[in-house]
Amino acid sequence: MTVRQKPRPERVLHMADVLNKLGHSRAQNLLLRLATRDPRLAQALRLVMFRFADLVQVRDRSFQVLYAAIERDTWLLAMRSAPDAIRTKLLANLSVRARAMFTDDLDTMSKQRRSDVEQAQAQIVATALRLEREGKVYIDRPGAPEVYV
Image (cartoon, rainbow, N blue to C red):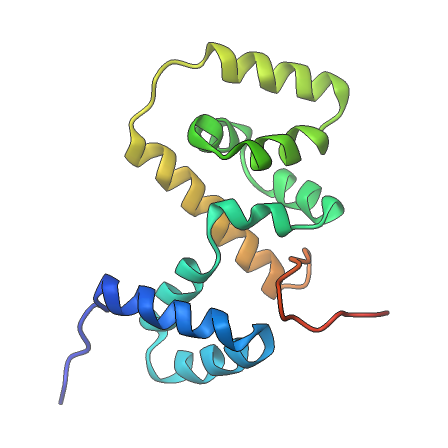
């Protein structure tokens, strides 16, 4: 009996790069098949393939659903080192009052450990992927077929 080892980060990054080049549909099919054999590797690949900076690809209505699914403090922590495009997207999807409060809280927030910020960002990414699987949010991805209803 063999014991599966934790996937090595450099191999996961290389595999994620290959999967990203295949296009969304083919990559998802391969990930589903891989998940039956090695769920840890499949999850590691999903997390690496979709990064926090990719949240700009979440449609506005879906972004609002994602925002509601995550505690405000987690969003504040994640925004400490967020790219401007993510910060702009988040603020654009808040009401005027909520935007003012969020900006004020972010401006007065003390320094945070990088690991805590990265953990908050990873939690948001994991939630986004879960909500996408559940069909509650839609993430525009290059190479993904357009969905019409």
